Image (cartoon, rainbow, N blue to C red):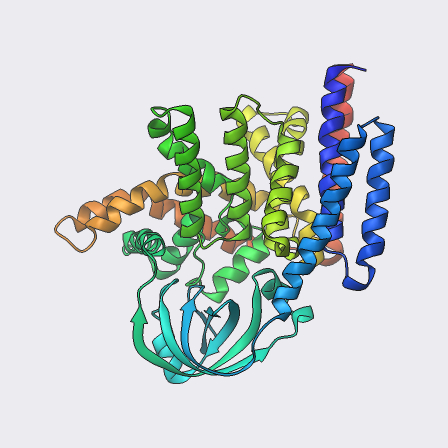
Length: 470
């Protein structure tokens, strides 16, 4: 038995363990013990097949038991909520957004999070609040049907607050949240020379702020297969680390780890702790830590460990569609992009772009099918056209936005406009691609045939590639 085989076997064992942990975490309450026993038996069988030590086998079973306990604890906390009338302080948890004629946001009353849909006078007061600020509210706390609100469930939202009155007093947020809000404000301010829709798209691409995006834009990006571009992910995290790499290279090993962890944590706060950026930040942190201690971890195991750490910290991420789409896209890119690139003939850059796009689409397919149905096959072409330009916007957007935001409104306002002009062109291109391919979206039998044709084409290319190797 070769060392390389042992390495691959250990990676797949880690993946199997994490899959069993997720299944145990998401197990329904009534059948959770049965699911735990079945997963434990499966792990024991696999461990015996590969001759894993008894200590390692017992440790994995104990980890599954911990997962079940941790999941039950998190779900029990969601049911532990005070209801009824409330008048007092509430903390703003999410940015307000316009939903029809209402202002939607999430507030925290003590340890309990509630979603708010405010109308009339209360909506005017809530439209300008910032995350972390405290306000005085008066209204009623009501339960929600969590079975119909899985998205709310994964965000720790326990109920709905029917607001009647909002006080004028606003207490400031913590220094950390104020610094994050300052960066977000500068990013938005730097794009004042953009059209309204372009400005909303720019903040979505750079910091994941889609609160001001019109409904037509949201629908266009979803129909064109480009919705992932406005969800902050590993690409954004990688560019942030690349931007500070000159500073990190001057630090010692321990200092680099501390500074890197701090920067990643701050960026997570700036992007409002979205599941996709949490996954990306944890993965980047684990990768950096493994290199810093001299034990670099292979990609497949790194992805599995990222999922495990994230779900241990927050078991409710096991119900987050955004989290699994982020994991699926990363898995597709890391596992499938390189083999696909070898099969595709043509220029290297084009092969890389097409392979990455197809691999990421295949990776997110299970989550997308479950929630949104089969995506349009034309989305692959849309991604090939939009992703490189969106990457450019993400790469230079944040470094350009902060100084430009400081210049806007002063004597150097023209300079700010010039600095942001390349970013404006990139944003406009991405928006144009989304608009065009939303119109070219195919559904039904035609879409199924197109997807089957793509997979058949991949199989043919794989067959030809294996013949050339032989």
